[in-house]
Image 1 (cartoon, rainbow, N blue to C red):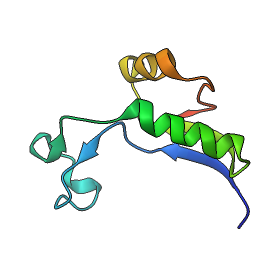
Image 2 (cartoon, rainbow, N blue to C red):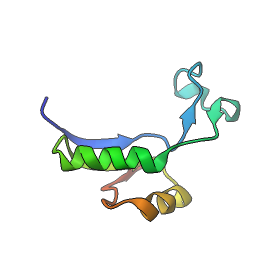
Image 3 (cartoon, rainbow, N blue to C red):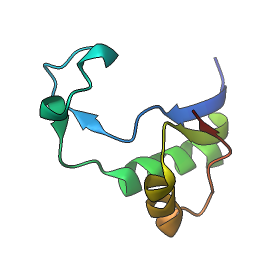
Length: 81
């Protein structure tokens, strides 16, 4: 595969390694740090290299989208909810 059509950050959070699967999205399984800036910069690089035709997010609320847009040079193409 040469590229993907859409590359997403599926959830705006980071979970403990032992919390497997989406059914474990509980407050006690969520880690406090999520390097949104670093992750988005890497996704922008995938876009620039042609590895992803579009980049976006999923399950982001207004606050998380605002935080993302403060540093993004390429805005997300989509917020899948």
